Image 1 (tube, rainbow, N blue to C red):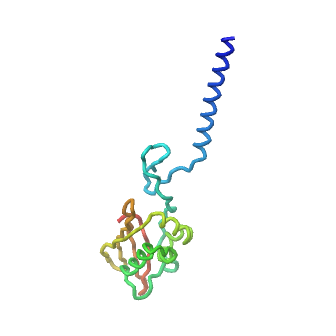
Image 2 (image 1 turned 90 degrees about the vertical axis):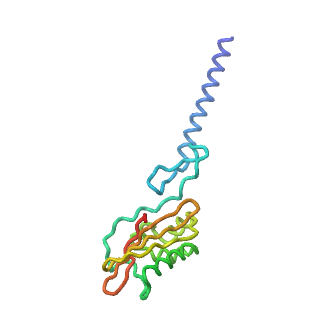
Image 3 (image 1 turned 180 degrees about the vertical axis):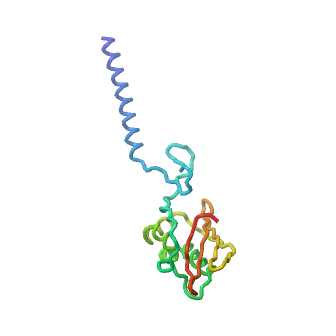
Length: 177
């Protein structure tokens, strides 16, 4: 009788352990993995107690696209690159994401998919202010570094403008300052 009792207790303990392992496997396979926007491994608050939450999902990186004035984003006549960037960043801070999206170079517009996707992602950053660097002009090209402030960290981009036949274009935006 004692042998039967020990066998039942052993089987019950095994069943509880099996249910715990299966429960963990189901939980682990259904949770959303963390996403990194910097290329560094994302912090997973589910496995690192006290860690910060994972960052908002990043847009698909824009491919290096050859500049083509036929498809490039035009800067309105009479605006300087500085004025254009000031308008872009003011639209972002004011949460006018549809306006800001249309001001991006074509490659970045394509990487976000559409204005709604862009707006959702940029809103998640909580951008509160911006700062423009000094313009560097070399021939028909103007380069300006810009930094957007978020509660977590600053986000820096380098913008490139090109002048073709008297028309100014927003040619590129790359991460980094």
